[in-house]
Length: 288
Ligand code: SAM
Image 1 (cartoon, rainbow, N blue to C red):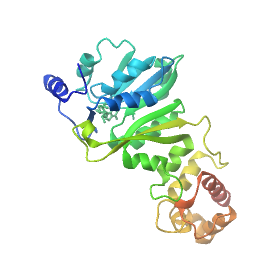
Image 2 (cartoon, rainbow, N blue to C red; image 1 turned 120 degrees about the horizontal axis):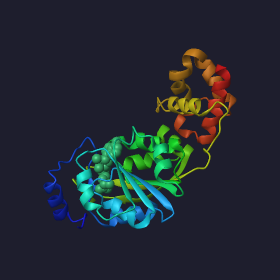
Image 3 (cartoon, rainbow, N blue to C red; image 1 turned 180 degrees about the horizontal axis):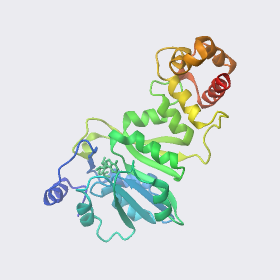
Image 4 (tube, rainbow, N blue to C red; image 1 turned 90 degrees about the horizontal axis):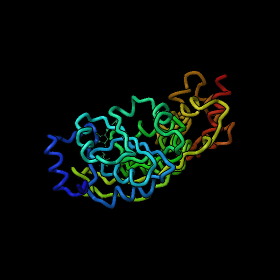
């Protein structure tokens, strides 16, 4: 069965009485070049175990199974396992797990299924929960690369550099854990149903150790980063005061900013990873 032939896909879905769910971000790929190119970019080889989130009817899953040693796909929609049983029949390196990726023990899954293999992620993510899924995956520190398709706007934010409009707390979070690279765009007509937005495939090479190691620790570092972007159009000092103004006062926040070598009128969006680490440490010291 050709899973990228719209007539065959419609017949398959009708046979199973399947209805698309908007809330599950169900836009299935129906242009053969896209799953092939995603798998080629991030699906690894026989030495790799690939975790796929949201196999849908399996068009990317099939491409992954052709390349990887093992593929484990996690699907939330209980209507899809019977469809996958049909479309993935004969793929003996494929395992389906029914459930919500945001509720699963991901390190446990890797341990159980990918012994002796290099774990990777390759997926066309449900766009409405793409950021929490990426965070859950990166936090585990278990994957060598994470290659995913997301809304183009999200891909731009993930890979954005300081001083650009797309740069924000999500960019810092991603680049703290990984080196993201936007590979190619995918237009809406490649999906069934067609989404309203353009999509992009992004490959994230996960860092062996985070980009910076502030003495204040990871949690306080990210509290600082979030606070720096709360008031994007204001100065860093005003933005930071939303989180730290009450204990430190505006003068205390301004002093911490100058102590780490930054201008008091700088905006949060101008700060790179090292600047954030220095700032977080100065704020931490001022609070201690
Ligand atoms: N991989 C298929 C493709 O490329 O055609 C389908 C991708 S579709 C954009 C997203 C898939 O993720 C859907 O099958 C949806 O049911 C599933 N999904 C949504 N939320 C999920 C979650 N929290 N955990 C696991 N799967 C989820």
